[in-house]
Amino acid sequence: MFNIANNVTLARILAIPVLVLLMYFPNKLTSLVAMLFFILASLTDLFDGFLARKYNIVTSLGKFLDPLADKLLVISALIMLVHSGWLQAWIVIIIVGRETMVTGLRAIAAEKGQVIAADKYGKFKTILQVVAICPLILHYTWWGFDPTPLGNGLILIALILTVFSGGNYMYRFFSQVSPASGSADK
Image (cartoon, rainbow, N blue to C red; front, side, top):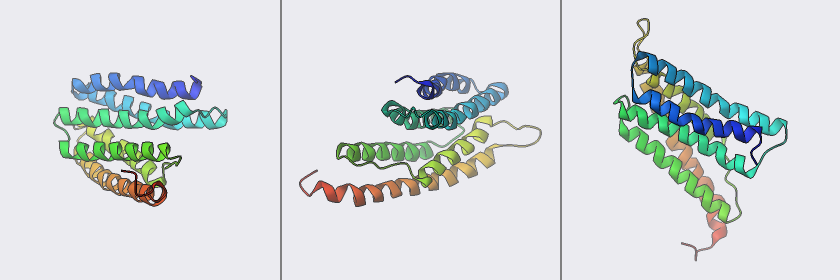
């Protein structure tokens, strides 16, 4: 159960309090360290999946923890950006709402014996969110470059993809799972 791939995923989850602490005391140095830490934690998502497939150690725990770790990492960073006043709360509310909805739909589908797997839009959404969050965490001007406008533009693109991807999950849920459930289920 606690194989190397799952341990890498758990390390990503355990990195979240460190990220939050760094972002809680914003200044130029902590923002740089927080961004680098966020990138490193995000990259573990590639590493744990690679290990699980390479060594054929894919587990139910890993299938549960991996997307949870991704969501917790991204949402924690977004909340801390709102806390610092560097990101508008409505953006985070939409992203968290989408993640909650998709998680709920997946749980209902699983209860009915169906799997709604992550698709390319969901995966690209996560990548774009991570890329957008980096300049927002960096925040301060570096050698005459202000990363905030770049981060704000990227987060809006990520938000559009987040909503689109959520709609795609809803469509897949209602076309795959809902017809099989019958009209008596509520």
